[in-house]
Length: 50
Image 1 (cartoon, rainbow, N blue to C red):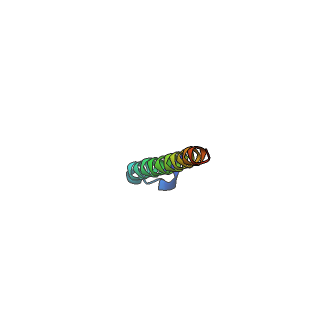
Image 2 (cartoon, helix red, strand yellow; image 1 turned 120 degrees about the vertical axis):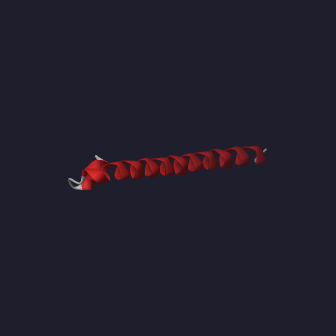
Image 3 (cartoon, one colour; image 1 turned 90 degrees about the vertical axis):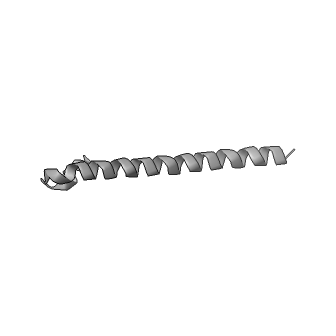
């Protein structure tokens, strides 16, 4: 789907696909960071509440 933004220029398809890969990887790392942060906060708050 991301290759549709090349508007018929086949020389831009590989660049756009690689950009999509980088964008997907960065969002994966962001969501992983948020998940780890939330779990760490719950763990710390759980142990400090005793």
